[in-house]
Length: 90
Image (cartoon, rainbow, N blue to C red; front, side, top):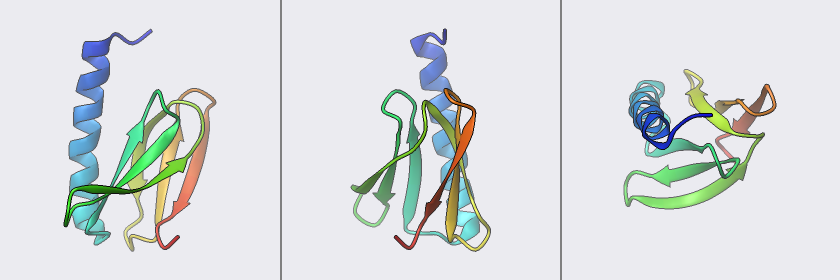
């Protein structure tokens, strides 16, 4: 079981990496944050800091990767050993 401090550290590192990947991928102005206990991904518009969507994914999402063209987001689901694919256009 992951303790809260370790989970917060993982979340912070994940959020930092996501911000860097989104900037590189050109998927701006959106950031994709995996919500481990909620089984979803928050889509945040960085232009106004608002959550624009919440996308359901598998159990305990633990990280995201944005494709180089910014068209897809892949989410690793720790709890059920699956990968979810989010189409950023929809």
